[in-house]
Image 1 (cartoon, helix red, strand yellow):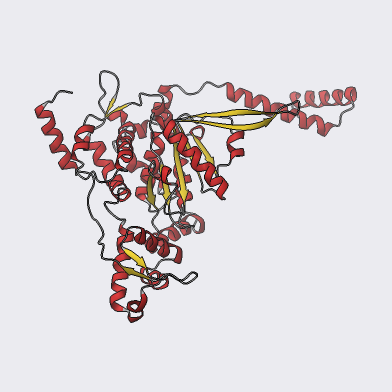
Image 2 (image 1 turned 90 degrees about the horizontal axis):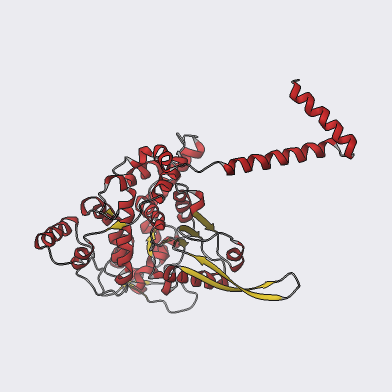
Length: 451
């Protein structure tokens, strides 16, 4: 036994005699005090400098394709869903802007919506992510921090009251950037007083839902993306779980602290991005039939800006310190991710999964006598597409909403029977190709119009 240990035991005996305290109690109090001192010491350590963050995240900063690196890293925990993962990462990165993006992840129950979202958010600093399973008035009231440049990750509300509350605060924070909510609070003297909760944005909303549509006022303020409900994706998931859980072959762990340092380095600035070709891009979008495009346009620009910000080290800057986005590197990278989402939202195009479902219904109507007699049931469709019932029914309902199928069954409680309508799926492209935009941009620069 060392001198320090013997001195400690002597001191314990003296305290025991003087204060008549049991030794286990002394030990417990000492341990608690030591833990408190250690926590205070850790909190007193200065945060890393910009140079230290850059050193930690050097490998990511030097990457010319950060999204590709992110996909490779996140493959260790998630398989498939490449578009969803990249859109989640871009959306969460946009928290650093004054007008960030918002994303609704939709799909049937157990399809992996929340798992994918939560895994992607592990790549962001914990202090920048606020997660609520559902958002109730009490949860909001007891949350002390503000929402400025945070990611607010929410699950689906559990009851109509929570849904109404969630819809209201989402709409207010997305449109106004600040939330004012009056609540009645009991005072020390027993009286009651109305106080106003104020939560400031901007904030990124990431929401998961089993519904095809959110509240109309929120739906138009968010991009929507469907999870992959195919049998092929289900097989990928089973193999990934078997690899990680059954065979214990998870491989080297992801160095999340490096990704956290990278995002903190980005947040340290500069973060403002200049999209010089924005007006040219607006002119090249020919189909202006959808009013919704007025809101999705901002999401498109923000997505381009987020990609440019991720590659700040490889982009030029204006004299004012603005990061310059490019067509070749930034628009070309995000167009494959966002073009179909915007076209689908503007009803200029339908999802490939829904188009496939309509085609199957048309084929079954030709093949089956029973189908021609009254329509195709969800049971037949799910067997043909090798889907579970909820996924097949979800697709059929989306096709009905798009006007491509009609439910001929009007008796309550009876399974639906679906037949094709005379409408045909739209395949209109909304966004110009990279080559088209580059040509228009070159022509615009040649003319050098007045700004």
